[in-house]
Length: 370
Image 1: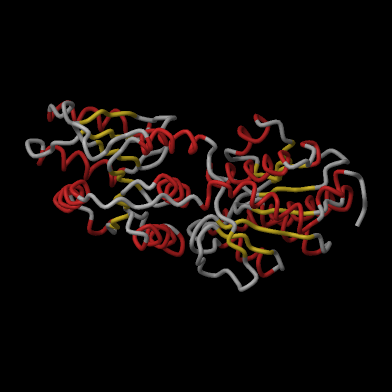
Image 2: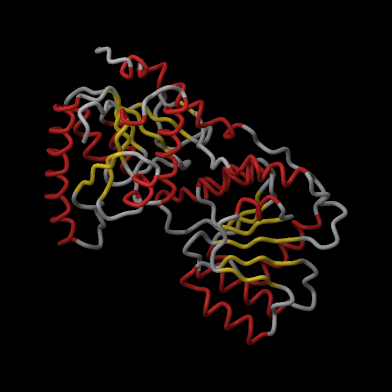
């Protein structure tokens, strides 16, 4: 870790965590913080190892991983590794004395927040979902200020601040695409189905059953992004049923935002990123929350869009081809337009401006001490 580093951003494990962390860092740089004043703490095992150095930031890797109640022996090893990780974080903080530690959730946030608490370094965490994650709850108990995505976040205390979720810059392009489409008069409606980058077996299975059963009644085009792990099996099923006149199948699309923007309806999980993107675009959607999501946060994320009139929710236990077809048909027949929510479009600058003002970060860049 470079001696001049003064701001630590800790966490990761999933793309959602890392993209938020990078957006916060980029926002700070855009407002005047030098890039070499920011260092990331991450796990040595997960996606931040690829994404963070690619964006030109330093990454300190920590041993161990999060706890899993089904792996008792592994948890004992992980607890020992966590103790070493905390010691490593404290030694780094003593050497470099950062002005601020920002956590985004994920394993590496824990040693960073514990070390910052012991040394009384200012600390902030960003919570993506509508239910506080375990790591961020620990950080909050250690005195971290919580920045939230949604207006109401279960578990967040009264000191939390809703500053939103930083969006991919491509969302602005996607909004422009959507504004040019005459959805009321287009020849054929379009539905996008996506279960995330790895795909969802449950969603894939019900969609292929729906297409097979109702193929003669389906008068809309389906773009099905099934995930890399499920592509061959899904392709084989559609081929066997001769359904490719109804479906365009893809394992992955890096222009998913553009697809959302050009769609009359989206069928997806209800992770925070997906919900915020659909909210910003104003795309009607049918959301199937992941039943095993901690604290049922995907259902609560989706309920936010339901209350806005944008989403219909199906719990996975009720997910059947007949139900999905009926809801899709109903949703596509609706003519009510929901105003896109622009709140998160400037979330990156809102968060970075708050951090700079609240914690006097530009003085750190100028070399001044507290």
